[in-house]
Structures are given as structure tokens and as C-alpha cells.
Length: 449
Image 1 (cartoon, rainbow, N blue to C red):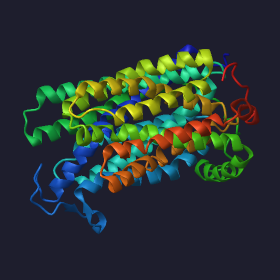
Image 2: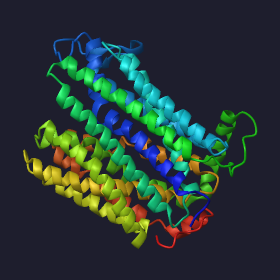
Image 3: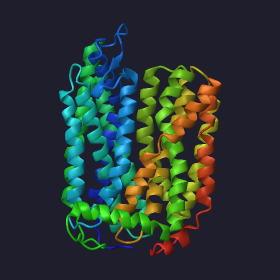
Image 4: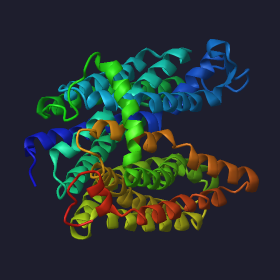
């Protein structure tokens, strides 16, 4: 079903996933945590890699352990994200220049990432401010980006379009990460300072990639008149007012809220597996870093194929059934990870391959399913709440994992605690009457669910 978009415009939309995935993969997943921790060590007077020092920094006079600095920054950026994203969504739905709002958020985040080139010596405060700005801008741009989906594809095409975008994102993120890892392996002379410099420029490269490839969607995407009507006065203050109206109006769509609850639960399990896989591999399975790097790259590229494969399956049996099937597969992944032998790279990599196949599809189809549950004209607002469910609650799984480990001193039992997120998420999603929920939002259900 064509709703006024062209293949030219849809390809442009796909490439924003290609552009921004460089930040989430190269910066957040691999390089930034160790980089900022090392910069904080230098600020604490430790020197690169040294241990004989106080190992505390004092941002704004607050005593912070060097190892806690980056996690605290992540927590702060998540808190700001929870505040900012719904407002950005409300603004985006009430402006006819939505793609320029996307560009403003993207270039702000990319600029902050490129400015990491100035984080030298012990400039940990500068690095922290730039990371928080980049991470919040990333979330804001993704909200606006998601909100284009209902305008680009009708109910029966939305799963395929969402899956292609997610697949291309994994391919782009994996390609830049591979290039940076090749540079690291060929240019690193083994000294701590050279490793730190290469990490810094790898981070900068992600900002350049993000900014450069954002130009393609900005050229191809078309801003449309807002269905919610233009803002009555100041766009920002009107966005806050509209946010209040949306929060009150959410009660009229309880099935949409119920889907968000299901997504919150099972997606938290997905995000926790992604975040803790490396720690599980090193601490419990005693694998070398090279094995982990190869597995991360493999997951990125297999997620490209997995997104397309599950998107194809959704065309045959429906997206709702496909996501439910993916949660069964995620449960199998957790059970298999529990039984992985120590110091055995091949089983770990095979399990990583399974994660790659199921990862992208479950995320892409969740996005397209939620797009069916949004009242027309409120896409960006509702995707603001969706992104909060994706990012703002990502501490629940790690907390459960950490509490189980603290009591049992077993990473394996900590991993098993994540089963609850997939089982409960499956049951909640199973209980959502999708066709009735789509009709309640005023939309036309796809032929298959």
C-alpha cells in the first residue's frame, strides 16, 4: 500500500540507520567506556594504566571513583533522555520541518562526538559533557527518525521497511567498527598512549561517519504538513503543553500502553544480553579479548541478514507472531549460554551467531508493530515514549543480574535471571489483542499479524 512515499525517499530513510549506528556500535559499545575511564585515571594522577594512585576524580566537587565515572555518565544521559525525548516528539509532530529537526539533532550529536578529539590528557569533564550531549542528541534524532515510518509505508509494508532500515544500520555500524579495529591492530605499537590515541580517533571517526551519511536522508526525506496542526505559539512551549495533553490522552489507548509494557520487559532482556555478553565471556568463560571482538563483529553482520530474514518471515506469518517466535529463540539463547563451557571460543561464537540472527529482527518488527498502534499525527510523541521504554529502563536487567550475582557469586545464575524478562515479555505480548489495538488507535490493521 503506497501512502505517498517513493523508493527514493525510503532508501534515504534507511540510511539514517546506517549513519547513526556508528555511534552506538563504535562509540558506546566498544571504545568510549575504556577511553573515558583512562582519561579519568590520568586526571586522578594515575597515569595511563597505573594503579598506585587515589583513583578518584572530583567533578563539581563530588568524589567519584574512576571506574564509576562512565556508568554515572550513562545514568545521567538516560535521565536527561527520559525528560527530553517526549518533548522532542511533541515538537516534531507539530512542525512542518521535521527533517530539519532530525538534522539538528543528528549534527549536534555528531559534532559532540567529533569534538572528542579534544579530550586529551586529563580532560575527563570535557569528555563527560560531550558524551552526555551526544547520547541525548542521538536519542532525540532516533525519535524523529522513527516517526517517519508510518508516513513511508502502509500497514502491509511497514514490517519490511522497518526491517530493511534496521538491517542497513547493523551493516553500517559493523563496517565502521571493522575498519577501526583493523586500524587498531595495524597501527598500535603496544604502548598505552598509542592505544588511547587510536581509541580517540576511532570515536571521532564515528562522528564524521554519522554527520556525513546524515546528508543522504536530509536530501531525500520529505517533510509533510503536521496532522496535529501547527503550533499555536512558541514551538517549544507548545511542545510541553502538547506533551501534557498526550500523557493524559494515553489513557484512551490502554492497549497501546499494554504493548509498551510488554516491549519494556522483553527489550530489557535483549539490551542486558547485549550489554553483559562481553563481561560474561571474560569473567565466567575466561575468553580472550580477540574472541570477543570477532564475536561482536560477527553479531553486527549477521544481524543484517537476521533483520531481513525475520522481516521475510513476518510477510508470511505476521509481525506479531514473528516477534513471539523470536522471544522463544531468545529464551533458548539464555539456556544455551548457561551451559557454555569455559575457555571454548567456538561455542561462544556460535551462540553469538544465533544472537545476531534473532537480534535485529526482533527489534525492527517491534518498531513496526508499535507504529501500527499510534494515532495519526502523534507519531513522534509516541515514539518518544517508545524510545524511553527502549533506553530509559535499561537498568532493570543489569540490576537483576547484579543482585543475583551478589547473592550467589555466579555469573551463570545471574544470566538465568534474565529468563524472566523473556518469559514475562512473551506472555504480556501474547495477551495483546493486536488487531483490536490497531483499530482502537484509528488505524487499518495489516492483512497478517
